[in-house]
Structure formats: structure tokens, C-alpha cells
Length: 291
Image (cartoon, rainbow, N blue to C red; front, side, top):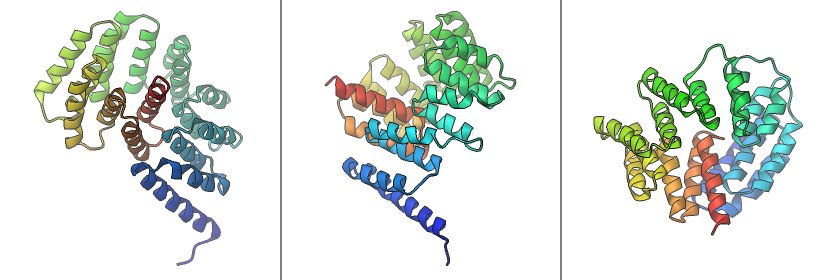
């Protein structure tokens, strides 16, 4: 079979990514950076470079990650502007994301991304303003609005909205996490636990219910119980990102930083740049500093 030079390069890159994933899975983090450097040196595709940056974040190489992202900013064009902005926000480069989005027409997708980036930079007012201009609101937009309202201290409004979302979304995992998080922010921790337990009792084998229980238990300082719920959820659904995140955070609390990073790597491999992986890695970094 004949491949042109670009095809050969892509095959080499794909093989290198497979090797990187194998190294991360085996905990051989020191072997990753040279392979990432090999890819970056022969590639000008910004999305491939962003994938490389996310890998360096997984191995806690913040300098290398940001060095690559600095180069990506120079590769922004009309064809890739939105995709790069989304990736930048996912990797905590929120100011860059806003700069990249600033020249785009504000359709729903752009407004949504701006709202997320503004909230991440500590500007809930701008976030609420942009959500208000979205024509076709999604559940994720309403959940984001709940977070922004909480950031403004408007807890009663946030709670009413969180309950509405849960009802409208048939008590989906994300909507229930949002409701429990809002209750906890209001200081109603016992109500958050009651909410989680009520859904767990309905189906004790449902991975979403188990993951919700794990989430709430960890937030309330019951790390062993949280790890137990997360373990049960992962036995049913080994790729459940919510359960993986909670398990990783429980491991961090037990000073098992490497094991937590491996779970972040698993999430990142499944969904590159997923916020859960970033939260785990940030928690790993904070725990390492405080040791």
C-alpha cells in the first residue's frame, strides 16, 4: 500500500501517541517528554500540538505544556479559531481563549465558550450576561448559570434553578451533581447527602447513582465511603468519568499522587482536555506543594 509523505508522518505520530499512552499507563512518566518533543518538532497541526500539551499536563510538566500552547496561539486562523479556543479554555488558558474568541461572531457556541471562560477567570457577571444571550439554552448552559449565580452569592436563585434542571433532565448525573453542589455551597451538606442517598436507593447498581454518592461523600470528608462508592460505580462502568475523578481525588487525600495521575491520564486518553482530568492534576500539584 502506498502512502504519501504526510501519511507516513501521521502514522509515525499515531504510533508515538500509542507509545506515550503505554508509558503513562505503566507509570514511566520520564519517557514521555522526549516522545512529545519528537512529535512537536515535526508537526505544525495545532490540534496535534494541543494533544501534546495536554499530555505534558498529565505528567505535570506545566512549563512544557505552556510552551507548546504559546506556539499554538501563533497558529490560530479562521479555520481553527473556535477549536483552539475551546482547547485553550480546557487547559486553563482562559484569557487566551477569550482573546481568540473576541473576533468571532457571537453565535450560541461562541457565547457558551465565552461564558465558561469568563466564569473561570472570576467574572460571573460577564458569564451571566453571555448565557442570557444564548438563543437555544442547553442543560450545560443552565448548570453554568447555576455556578455563576452561586459565585454571585445568589444561592436561592441558584437552588431553584438547580431543582428545575434536575426535573427537566430526568435526574441525570450532571444535573444531580449540580443540585448537590449547590446545596453544599449553601451550607446544606446534610440535604446534599439525603439527595444522593435517595437516588442511590432507587437503583443500587446504577453507576450514575453510585458516582453521585461517591461525589457527595468525598465533599463531606467521608473519603473511605466515597472511594467505596466510586469503586462500585467503576465495576459497573469502568469509564465513568465522574467516578474516576472522585476516586482520583480520594487517592490524592491518601497521598497516592501517582495513582491519581494515572486516572487523570485515563480520562485524558478517553476525552483529551476533559475538565475532570485538569481538576485532578491541579489537585495533585497542590498536594505535592503542601507535602
